[in-house]
Image (cartoon, rainbow, N blue to C red; front, side, top):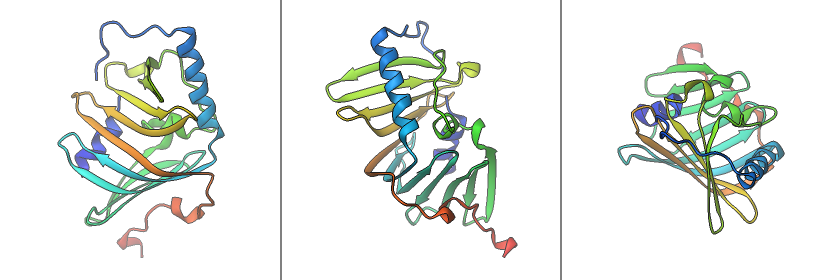
Length: 199
């Protein structure tokens, strides 16, 4: 399971030699994606996470912008991931250990910000299929470290999954189902996990 989340925290495979130049249609779709995220206050969904070796984990995903989220894994997975507004915390329940990073410095940081604005240098690809929109982004300061592709159903626009490709070329997919927009969420969902030694 650590390898699953390692891909998420490394984020962002080397870019292909010719990164896509954004057309006016691409820029318009990127603006739609920004507006979509900026309209989200809270979100709840089931998620399925597929790791680079085919590992599968499921659970519930909760989001409260800005800077709060929770991945609650179904048993037998014994980890939890929580962003409490300041830190993104990976907690291993079995070992009673946690690792933490500033939310803004993580791959999901830009999507959790008070205002979502993609640096145009960050967007390296926009593609469309009937009813599907894909936007691929990188960290502009670390363009050789990987990418994240956000996948939306289009009609109306709705986030369906994201794929993270790390510096080693390994992919982790998170797919969302049963998505609820603007549910009432208990603030305690985003409290840091209580470690046994603190009880």
